[in-house]
Image (cartoon, rainbow, N blue to C red):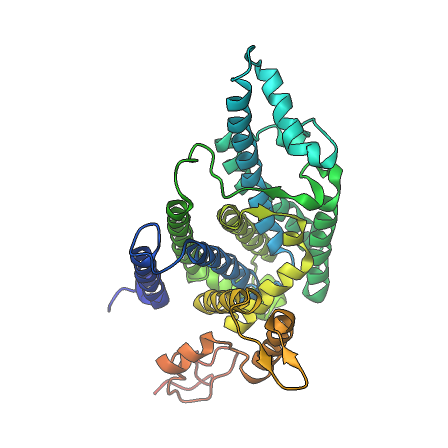
Length: 414
């Protein structure tokens, strides 16, 4: 009997990593900063951001498609990761600029004067000059990188513990996650939130200490960092949803009461998945916003998390590669339609401008997929590969898994 390994049971991991590696190499060869210049720096950044969105979509698929928790708050974790790294980027860049300027004065400034000048530069836009307490670790890159993991992780842990211990499920849990996201975004819109209110954090594409490195080179570096994070995240979540862990969380999705009756502590599994996916979402955000260059509270608004659910549904819920494909397709189409690349359609009496009609098209696509192809784009791969065939048994399959081998009680399997 051949012993099954992780890769044999998860063949999509090999093909996904292979496709991702080949794609990354092709982009590197064609990019402006590392190849023959056929692909512009701005498009490389777009592709890098798309890889980050694919990672957060996979995290959303694990919590929704595999565990059955429709979270409308995972883009909040994504945005918090961006804010944490953005604080260091703004502080360190401002410090370099001001230090060079103040050192040219006849009397060199003291560290306190430099610190106060940085505060005035960053928060002068919102009528303040003092650093809020949440910026205490901003001068330290290692501390802010730790906060990229800790802040989304602690928020997910606390929120999940409060919700799951109360056994809130279904649409009520979705409403709670949406309320959490809305409360966070409304708080960040305030100027006294400590994160510059509606102005957000800007200039994040300028990496401190690398001012002489052109953006074309930085874009490739972030593109590869995003690709590595996506590949590692795919392997991690493929491992999580396979084996005993995967069976339990699927059971929670299909029949939570029965899994609890079998002796499993359902709340612990749900809390682990919710917290882990929140942490990975934060890491994806920390890679995304230096490529976007700016982050503001609009990025954490509830509509962003709704878009994330739409991406996963279009790609195929319950399939890691489906969620990744859905995020990539919708993200790139969104950039094309809203970026002015898509030509307007003149109907004579009315001209369709895709910048205005893109959301309508996205909504219609979501409705069409839900009604006509509930397995999403990922379902096409099931048809091509003829996956999950029903084996021949002495009886019809009884249960949610059409591939389950089972026989009628008292009869032997033929």
